[in-house]
Amino acid sequence: MADRPKKPTLADEIVMVGVQPHPFRDLYHWLLKANWSHVIGLITVLFLGVNVLYAFAYLALGGIANSTGTFADAFFFSVQTMGTIGYGAMYPQSLAANVLVTSEAVVGLLVTALATGLVFQRFSQPRAYVVFSSRLVISEVDGVPTLMGRLGNDRNDLIVDAEMHLDLVRTAKTKEGHLLYRSAELKLVRNRAASLSRTWSVMHVITPDSPLYGLTPEQAITEELAATLSVSGVDEVTHQTVHAHERYDTDYIVFGARLVDTLTPLPTGTLQLDLSKFDDIEPTAPTASFPFSWKPKP
Image (cartoon, rainbow, N blue to C red; front, side, top):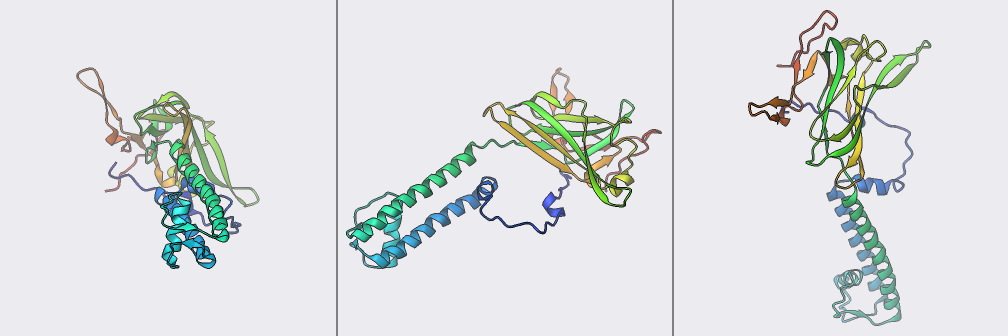
């Protein structure tokens, strides 16, 4: 895996313009996908920001017993109120202060409920740890050109009733000269697995009815060939559906190479699975029907 190439993401290649901004419409989805540091930071900023606002309100209205009238006292009294700590050293002693404390208690319940729900959802949300081979390869298998890729579950458990799909996208020009992106689903030799563990190979046989039939490396570059390999199934631990996908641009679809075997029979009669070879590929010899052979970069 040492030479594993880094794939560009779709966001790296497509510049979007004309998108209407909706900063709050998808905030919940963003929070579910964001890094933990961003989520915790946002919750902290929200908590401190609300307490700062209430601190200014307490300073304006007064009515807090044993307060020196400083912002620090008002802020820490707000924190104690929102956190339902109640040390007792400071307490509201006017109607206005009691009304403000009541409103802060309600706001505190909402902030706590939102933060708790968000954290719980992030913890309970099933996430697939599926790894994909860094490249797709095309070489002959039993004398027929075949597109192959590899994927596996990076956890020690199983993904039950896993279903794989391999979709192809390429550019084409219409008779009128317009550029179109045409997509097609490639038929796999086996697209379902009763259980997906560490490794599984997907294969698409390039027969005359295949969208890849007769394709050359030069045509793949010209037509901006790209493929997406996806898998979905049920995690055996959480019993929830998980899914993952990987995108392969033209540079990551290799002609004239095969995936290196990860399973090796041992003298003891058992099999050894070497996951360090998960991404490794090796060149195949060119033939009359498939005159391509991959040449690794020095």
